[in-house]
Amino acid sequence: MAARETVICIGCPLGCRVTVLQDKKGNVTSLKGAECKQGEKYVLKELQNPVRTLTATVPTTDERFPLLPVRTSRPVLKVLMKPIMRETVKVRVKPPVKCGDIIVKNVFKSKADLIATTDWPGPGGEG
Amino acid sequence: MASRVDVAVIGAGPAGLAAAIAAREQGAEKVLIVERAEQLGGLLPQCIHNGFGLVYFEQDMTGPEYEKAFVDKAMRLGIETQLETMVIDLDEERGMTAVSRKHGYMNFKPEAVVLAMGCRERSRGAVGIPGTRPAGVLTAGTCQRYVNIEGYMPGSRYVVLGSGDIGMIMARRLTLEGAKVEAVVEIMPWPGGLIRNEVQCLHDFGIPLLLEHTVSFVHGEERVEGVSVCKVDSERRPIAGTESFFPCDCLLISAGLIPENELSRKAGVALDPVTGGPVVDQDRQTSVAGIFAGGNVVQVHDLVDWVSREAETAGRSAAVFADKGKIKPAKGVAVVPGRNIRYVVPQFISGRDDVTLHMRVAAPGLNATVKVGGVLKKRLRSVRPSEMIVLDLKGAALKQAGPEKELIVDCDMKGSD
Image 1 (spheres, helix red, strand yellow):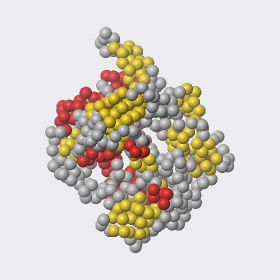
Image 2 (cartoon, chains in turn green, cyan; image 1 turned 90 degrees about the horizontal axis):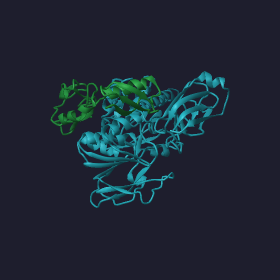
Image 3 (tube, rainbow over the protein chains, first blue to last red; image 1 turned 60 degrees about the horizontal axis):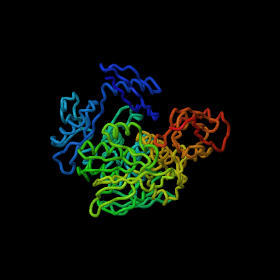
Image 4 (cartoon, chains in turn purple, yellow; image 1 turned 30 degrees about the vertical axis):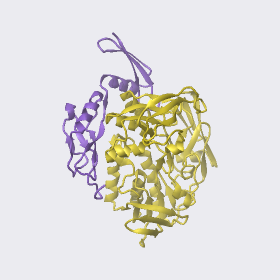
């Protein structure tokens, strides 16, 4: 069965709705609606390998700073967002923490690490 | 506070930090940031999502990372901060009154002031939704603080009113934390936030976006039990008979931001009725000499990067003012919104120097041409009220166009979105 999908390009405010037809092997046979080449590239990538940077928080052992914000060190497959979220609740971080510290290595075998996005304590002491 | 303060910055969010850094780098010796919260950064610490810094650092950063870049720099430059301190009065001679638990009541008179108070969210009261008054109605930003900083989930089943960026980002965040977001309801025919948020926050998670709909009633006694959602007509009035009931235990309001200008008013600063912020010239000087403004207190930006840039202009100008005791208002030419332009900032320019104009259209459309008097013509494939238009004007082009008292900005379109 050939598949038909619509992808909205997020490259610019235009937000082109791009319709893509694929044959049963997954080869793209038609791509319509993109106003520019970059948009077509984005749409193909989004179709074949949709990735996102996941941001979340993980619990700490410090009640004055209960949550440490984290992100994946690189974009991960969209389908891995929920399983990675389930990993975040298993973590207990013991401060001090520096921005960029690895909190979970290769989280859910995504090849991305969960890394801290802030310092605690901060530069002016706490906060 | 007896010692001389060259530049006092009110607010330590992205605008205040950028303004203070720019003032210091411009040569102001004593730069003081006064902040009412207990930490620097304003809202950035709770904006844990990415998408910051793409313009300013050409890097995709989270809110806390963007904040850290500025806080670290401010500390290195020896900028002083006074936290948990609320400025309660400002007069047109730059006399400031502030209070804090630690220092009590303080009066001081800085050589120059930068207003960087940012904005606040439109609340349920300001939107005016009929119904009961149960627990569980809160703004998207308040919810963001509960979830990302304090570690509370205010509910398990949500409806979001308004498709502003924070609302859509919270819809994703709550879904990832295990809650169910029933719908995002938007009264306008177009989404209120950026396209990338519509795609990555709503479409990614199958959250419906109901355009031309609004919440017509809040149900529940102690706690929200659900909301009625109905269609609206072209005048944005609810259409009778179109109501449907959405069960939920939380209603989030993401219905726009309002620049916070109580202090500006006290100081006699003239405000623009459309932006809700001070009328400024290209140096970001307000109508009161020595008082400058930048960031969301002037106009609600969609990207923090532009907040930082605008506040830097204000900070640099404030440092010059502190040094020279004056800065000539750049009021040679008024920039006036024309067809399909809601506002333009700055409202005044010198007419001689390079300047960046920020503007928003009133209605979306395709194949637009934005004309700035006879000085600049720019074609844009698509314009939307939610996406700020940024145009650079060259001083040479302005001079060549000759002495005009007024530049009218028009946006004409060949098609509608």
